[in-house]
Length: 585
Image (cartoon, rainbow, N blue to C red; front, side, top):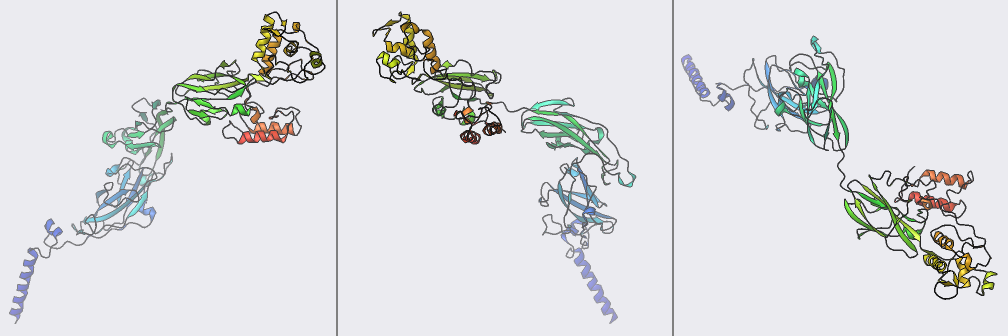
């Protein structure tokens, strides 16, 4: 019986070894490694739940990822991915075999093949066991994980610190620090401190050199990436993109030095220095357009007080119309292309039209409020159309001046003079020599013709009747009958002056000469009390003082009524709220 049992035992033992060596009990992974028995499952590592232990050595340019040890002799593979949403296995992630350590570090050099660590940046990581001396090989195969391994830990997250300047704690374990004191740098290879002019958004290179410690360098601000292809950690070279806004921008380098130990020891900041490599000068884009603008004003005095004149249309190149006052680029037209342009206004019955203009930047203060250089106080050139040459970035300030060409007589021949002349009272007006009911340039010419031909009385050519002589002597004495001898060129001059807004005729009884308006105040009737070319709260203050009689002036008499009233306030308010007019506080 004992022999039978022994025989059965030996038989079963032989069958077992046959099965083992035939590979039926060995996994594919184990067989590939040449092990004649199943490999044990690899233990899954864990990551500390305490954030202070999960991530250590955190600075603005480096961080250390930690996990809990499986055994003193375990080997691990860790995977680190930039960004919280990057999936494991992404091409931006990297895996490394870690021999008997429970941490992995990256820094500003892009160490371990990751992109350089940047300030205030998140990273996600995980770790798995690969082997140990106690268990040289363990089974990690798992087809359910994209990586093909079954013992990955849960994920941990770490974030680098925001960029800071200076300071830091002493390193652990008595490690000594290398404390930098200076460095050198350049933009586009130019000497340190140079100002480099580049176009908005242009590419440039930045080099920051701290000798043998360039693995701790990074630029401050800006849009820069480490040039790992050409630099190879020799100088700290970066490829950068300039800002798009014009201005000057200092370009700086920073180095944060750590303990003079290898990468396996947590790095603690010892000192930080910052220096300026140079300055970028971003020029404003060259102007490609110009402007045309100006006023429509009534003469004399350049006054924008007449509703009819204010509503006149200004036409650009025969197509773009503008009825604003002021008119032009900033008031409806928009920018104007460089080159020759035709600006015109239509003829207006009862007025002669002329223009004045200046060109910026050639003419100083051209277009400035209140025309301080008097470009528009000069005698206007006659015409309702003008060619102007616009330059890129330049401006044409073009004013249209409307001078009345005729007026109704300011007064009429009344008794006793009308009785003496045998005419109806109030029919013949002073200055209206032609008798057409208007005083105009033709009447002045008739006077000059009468004088030139000897001042003959009659009804023939170049002759005046007694009634015409009285009407022509506009500078005579009121209620004193004039003779042919009293008529001269002075009367013609007075007629032309009065048509243009000058004093009235001295022959008109009881009339006071019309005062000459203050020149160059085109927005007076819109509320510009101080005539600075803008409707502001200062104009309101002037009206308030004069309305409350704390001032006896009539500066804010915007409607020319001879008194300061609420109607003047309405004029100011409408002008202040009109978006087409210049304003200020």
